[in-house]
Every structure is written in C-alpha cells, then in structure tokens.
Image (cartoon, rainbow, N blue to C red):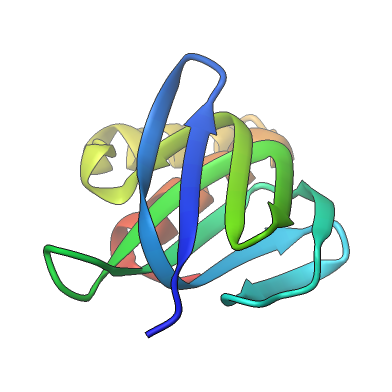
Length: 127
C-alpha cells in the first residue's frame, strides 16, 4: 500500500509524525484530500480540523487534530503541516473548550467562537 509521511508541527512542538494513506485539511482554497502521489502543493491552512488516516506498524487508524492557521506543503510523498497552534483531539479539554465557546458567544467574538468550535469538532471527529 502506498503511503505518505506526515509531520504535524505547531509553533512550540512536534504534534504528530507517521505514515498515512490520506490526509484531509482545510485550506484557504477549500477542503483538500492528499494521498500518496498527489501533485506538489503549497497552501495556507484555515482554522479547522485535520483528519489523518494512519497506516504503519500499529495498523490503520485515524488521528484528528484542531489546527489554527499555518501552512501545508506536499512533495515527494512527504506532507508537512506547519500550524500556529495544533492540538490532537485526545489532548483537548472538552469542558474548557465549551466554556471558551460560551464566553466567545457572550462577547460576540467570532474568531474565538470559531477556535472553540473547531476544538469541539475535532474531539467529536467531525471535519
């Protein structure tokens, strides 16, 4: 099975690295799916969820992360997701995200509301 190597990196740490058969991310041009053999790509990531269909020694699975801005680069079956902020779904504190969402709604802060919503959608596995 063809694979691509994925690196998901935030400004402060490497979030996830491994082999995948498919990655779905939101860019300024819309949602994009990247599979092995995809054309070279350079794009701007929008705030949203990234879904990674993993392969490799541990078997197939899915990794979901909330990403807030950054860049995506793909060439030679190597995908780099360079995010300002990125959190794996299992790292997200749901109660904190729910409180942040309510606060953002009360203050009519659309950007904060979007960030909190993306975090909750990542936990739910919704792209």
